Length: 191
Image (cartoon, rainbow, N blue to C red; front, side, top):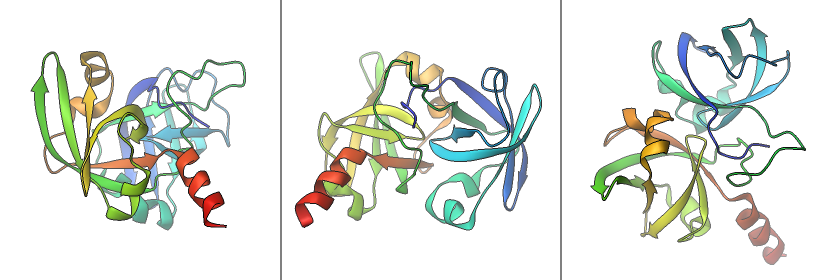
């Protein structure tokens, strides 16, 4: 389980059809083989590492459901280690199980923040709630407004400069994970 609070922005150093290597410093400090790590909000398993890099495998299902297949060497990615039982839950409950990839429609300034409008697969829209949580490339954000097939989030300057969002523009794909609690409620009510 993750919180959606990005610890570090790493750099893709190797990109293969079913694998990825990332250069990182902070998240490799206490890394072990088999550990989970969120890469742009996608929970992946560390299969190899040293003090400055880690490698993960990419399953076909992961490539179908996320934007990771579009990564290239040199691209920056958001990284987060799993939540320790003794840690604060600073964002929201994020599983790292990406529901789908959305697309940045627009980015506009508002005060010192930026409003990102994200086009979303319609099947996810029932789980998007104004003032509710959503993970965007693994970043815990609050939904500002909900439309028929899109939503907006407000990104503060700190989040913009400490994640890979500063490199996004209209047309870029982003990984989306909706609030797991909403999916559980729907499942229970369907019975």
